[in-house]
Image (cartoon, rainbow, N blue to C red):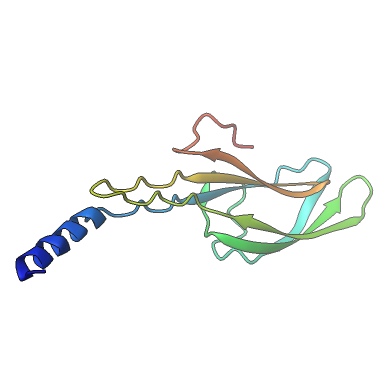
Length: 139
């Protein structure tokens, strides 16, 4: 192969791989809901770095991805007993799509999770994917 053919092939390979970027992972958010009627939260701790005691019922707050643990202590208002719940949950982001040739990859959709505490325990569920869920009822 001549030097010119090699340069052309190199340029062609670079063009095929493109300069486009992969899409970014979506963002993740959590709504912390403590609307309990028969119980009162005595304490709640978690390994979520963004957690603080003032985050409850304030709307969707950014949260890191990962696996987290919690310890929740409730006081039963009717029976006067203490209820303790422990567990773990996982927060995952939607990955971005890979770039293809000259076309950039699309970003992953944002994910919105709800954490709810009541006398049945602590539940975490994925509530919405996409733009901010103004149509959802926030406990």
